Amino acid sequence: MATCGRLATLLNLSASTARQRVDYQASRQGIKDAAGRLEIAEQMLEAAKANSVQQGRLLDAQLNALESEANFLDED
Image 1 (spheres, rainbow, N blue to C red):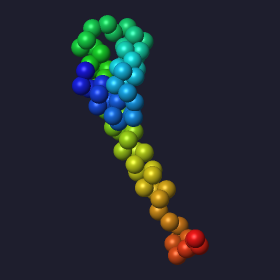
Image 2 (cartoon, rainbow, N blue to C red):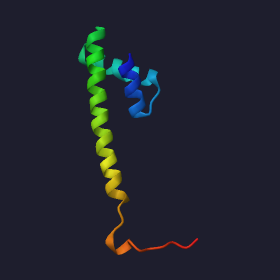
Image 3 (spheres, rainbow, N blue to C red):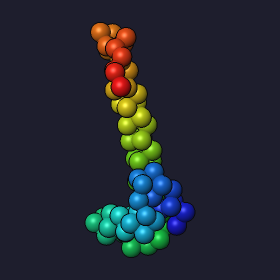
């Protein structure tokens, strides 16, 4: 599935590991057909994208300097 490949890319996993996660989630929900697994993979992909955006915003917020430390220089 191409969706598992995109999921693997977003989660920094191998394609087989992403496919195993989709299969595990499908088995927990009792889904055995390919269409159901594709739907689960798409849901997991959307969740990973949302989490990626949230993590990016958090990192941006953490990288901003405090006003008191804005002019701080570190010696080499």
